[in-house]
Structures are given as C-alpha cells and as structure tokens.
Amino acid sequence: MQPRPARSRPPLARRVLATLATAAAVFALLLTAPVGSAHAVTVPGPPSGWQTVFSDDFSGGSGSAPNGANWMYDTGPGSNFGTGEIETMTNSAANVHLDGSGHLDITALNDGNGNWTSGRIQTTSANVGAPAGGKLEVTASIEQPNPGSGLGYWPAFWMLGPGQWPENGEIDIMEDVNARSQVAGTIHCGTYPGGPCNEGNGIGSGLTACNGCQTGYHTYSMILDRTNTAAESITFYLDGTQYFQVSEAQVGTSTWQQAFDHNLSIIFDLAMGGGFPNGVCGCTTPTSATTSGATMSVGYVAAYTTTGSGGGGGGGGGTTGQVTGYQGLCLDDRAASTANLNPVQVYTCNGTPAQQWTFVQAGTTLHVLGKCLDINGGGTANGTTVDLYDCNNTGAQVWIPQSNGELYNPQSNRCLDDTGYGGSGTQAQIWDCADTANQQWAIP
Image (cartoon, rainbow, N blue to C red; front, top):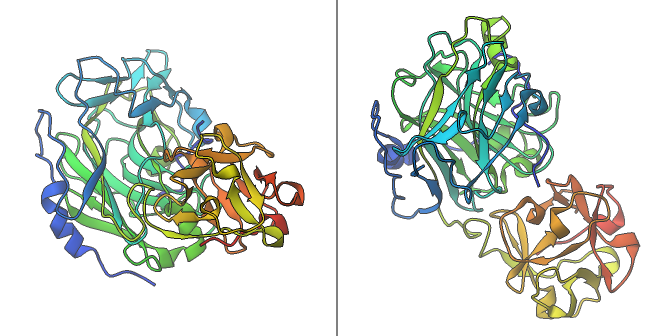
C-alpha cells in the first residue's frame, strides 16, 4: 500500500494464531451476498453459537435519511480528517440517502467548479466489540462506485475506537481508490508516525483484486478473534474468502489491547482525493476528468459476537472484587446508591457491595451494582469527575488497564485519578496520565 495518512478525526461527543480457515468455512454462507443483485438483501441471521449485536437493512423511503437511532453524520471539510481528501462531507440527501429498495447510497458530487461534496456516517456510539474469550464479526454488502473516470474516488467501510488516533485502534474493512475494483484491509494502532503499526500506512493487505465489485454487491468482512486473549487476531474476508490476517504478536500486547480490546464505531464514507488515491496513481486527484455522481451503495451491515468468557457487547461476566488505589483505598460507589450521576469516590475498603467492581473485558468497562463507571457528561477535560451511570457502550465508560497500573480512557486521552491524593471520601476524576501514585489501580 502506498504511504497515506490515517482515516481519522478528533473524537466525537474518539504468539501468532492459527489461520481462521474453519471460521471462514462456517461463515461462507453468512458472508456471501448475492452478487450483482439490485434488490434488497435480508440481513443474514447469526450462525449457531453467535448472536446479532447490531444490524441495519437500510429500509426506508426513497430519499430519506438513514435511521437516526443507528447513525449520525460526520460533516465538514475533508481537510479536517487528516487524510488529504478534498471534499466537504454533508448531511444533504443529495449525498446520503436511502434508495427506497433497502440500500444506503453515498454519492460524491462536483458542482462544476471543482468543489466536491460527499457523505460520511458512523454509528452513534462505539457500539460493537469482541468479548474476551470470544469473537466479533462485522460485515457489509457493498457495491463500489462505478464512475466513468474514477481518479480520486475513495470508498471505505471501517471501524474506529474512541479516543486519540492511532492508539485507539482503526480497522479498515474495505477501501478502494481510483475506481480500480480492488480492496484493501488494514489496521491502525500504536503511535504516529511509525510505531508498531507503521503509521501512517498501518499494517495492511495492500490493494488486491476485487473482480466485479463495482458492478454488483459483495460482502466485506472482518473477524476479531479473542478466543485466546494472549494471541488475538483480525482476519479480513471478501465474499467469505480470507485474504489477509494480522496477529497481536505483530504489534505487541499492550499496543493491541489499547487498540482493539474495546468497542468501536462502524463508519461508511466516500472521500475524494487524498494521500491514498494520490499515492496509488502518482498524481493529484481528483482531476478535471473525474466523473461526478458515482455512488457507494450498501445493502446491509451487521455485527455478530460469540459470548466468550467476559460476556457480549460490553456487559455481563468478568472478574469481581475491589479496585484499590493510593494508600490502599478502594474505589467506592458513594452510599451504595444506584442513581445515575452518583459520585464514585475513594474510600476505606470495607468489603461492601458498593466496592465490588466487575471488570468486563468485552468493552473494557467497570461495573458495580448493575451500573458502570462513567466520566460525567462524557467530558474530556482535566478535572472532570467520574460517577455511576447506566451502561451504554459509550467512550466515557471505557477504561483500559495499562502495564503501570493506570486506567486509561481513550476518548478523553486521560487516566482515572484520585483527586489531589485526597483521602477517603474524595470523588475521583480524570487527569493527564502521569504515572503517579494516585493513578495506580489494582483491578479484580
């Protein structure tokens, strides 16, 4: 793959395994959509032992917006996204709409003066993740854009973790550039530039043949396998056939955990120009000859998980016990209240239910009394307090254990902090990760 910046933006409200040939065989029927069909395709149900955790068949009236309970628009100049793309992303029906026949259409348009508009949508939260000891599959049926002259077209189906890129993790399930009828699968992680994931290129398959992908619907899928949490992997499929795999051992355990052991958002977009298409053609795209009005059409998207040892979808299961910090004080739900926004504090350890936290590796969340450790209002600033709230799979509830004992929240790029070394009864907060004694926590 040619050098390119990462497909990312600032956060919104952000041992090698054996091959998965067996998994590919199990999923061959599930992952393969009717090729060339212009009709709506029913979202496949999960195989035995799996469950559907998210899906959309894009049903709705012609010209209507995608379901607002599932999707939100990501608008603004492409220059905001750090990829070099040149379009402006809008929420206009001209760029993003349902076709009335069970498809989501994203269309890139030139106003005749070289100004391009297009669309980008993502799930309203980081809503899907692989449970510890289990698997996550995310798959979509897509027809790539088919312009007469395609220099600059950059369709993508991908996933992004909450927090600071690239350590928050990115999985590019389908990318093509310049209407080449190809596909690339890529992961991003670690640090930029360089690092264990070779940023900003990532670790990827490079562009590989995707015959007929501009003239019919094909399935693009990835499976994140955490059945062995010491040797995890991500595998990419085209129409149910594996074509690329990346393992935890290639990037290191801590980098992998930060990037992929939590929930991610699902994103569809159609960019124009940028580092990837320009690098492939050795030119500046789009050109004056690039055809306006080509569309990426999505027939369905779905996510499936196996239960694993930690529960699915960020809830249930896990290991329960006290979370201890500075001077041996315990993380405590004040007065054992289950009210939303109830303060979470440090307090003398007493073995009560208010101090019995469950660390759920699926989604990397901390639960007590049926609710989750949460950053107040989804805040990201130093000093934002933490409290108890309904578990909701948002970035404000992701806590990733670090090797030095810190509990890191990617969305805010900060750590759980015993405020001012304050002593028993002090409400906890988030603060810049500093490897200090008041940020060291022992979890169950």
